[in-house]
Amino acid sequence: MIKKHGGNVYKFAKEHQVNVEDIIDFSANINPFGLSDVIKEAIPSMFEKVLNYPDPNYTDLKDVISSFEGIPEEQIILGNGAIECIFLLAEHLKAKHLIIPVPTFVEYERAFSKYQTEISYYKMSDMILDIDCLIESFSDQVDAVIICNPNNPTGALVERTALEKLLNYTKEHQIALIMDEAFIDFTDDEDKNTMKTYIDSYSNLIILKSLTKFFAIPGLRLGYLMTGHKELIESINNNRMPWSINSIASQVGELVLKDDLYIQKTKEWIVKERQWFYNQLSSIDGIYPYTSQGNYIFFKTDGSDLDKQLAKYSIMIRNCNNYEGLSEGYFRVAIKDRNSNLKLISCIKEILWKS
Image (cartoon, rainbow, N blue to C red; front, side, top):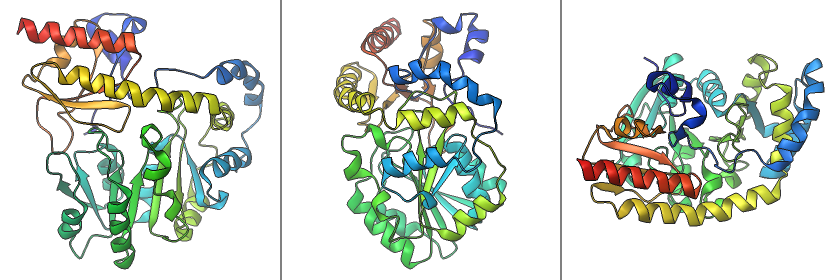
């Protein structure tokens, strides 16, 4: 069964008989700044390129990503969103036994199960991943582990010193370490938190990145993976379908990674708004939020129908009851602009007061 994701405003609009433009969507973790001015100005001129096939090697885009990440082009695989990279990884890594700390992003299981990988879950204690306990849970059959950092949906961040220990253990035991850093850009110190500096030294390390969240381009679908695993890179490049990224997405990717003003503005904003939003949620009786390093806040509440109650206000939030390891009463809300955040806080207070 395909597990639902956040962000399906079209289904929500149909079910609740509202216009899409009237919905305030807290269920999808997208930068509320929207498209940067650089992209808005450039898009009209991009359409001429749809008359030709994209460069099958996406040379210019890879060059920009290489410069942005400090990673050689030959260690980069592009994808139609990070989700395609996850499925490519599942297909070509050929892992026999994958361990997934939960709760976390729902697509890992679906991707790897498709290619007959056995899945084991490690349930985190109070939503915190203890690396020592995780390592102790490994069986002799485990040959891959995937960690979302910061985690989706909890927003919890594992410090790099702990991940270094896991990296050394997995290298020694020939285990692939997959780090999903889709939200690493939103953390307080991306350079301090990312594991990409270890790619050259650890061929078992694979890092997933997404451009859709930070740069607010989910409809364009653009992501990539980075690794020093030469056999994996070669297998994917030799066997994947061509032109999985359209020419407009490729051009947008080239521009957004050079948009230093947008990047800096977002990083400065998220640090302040995340703390303010967390404090506001913490002040509401019956709402129990977890600290986050993502652009979203995860919380528990005594009621299990908060999403249904908020739908009456044309507000969407992410009910997390379909995450492995979670039950009813857990929700995730994206951090949006201040007016939208105030609206959500006000509506939650009104709902809880009435109950």
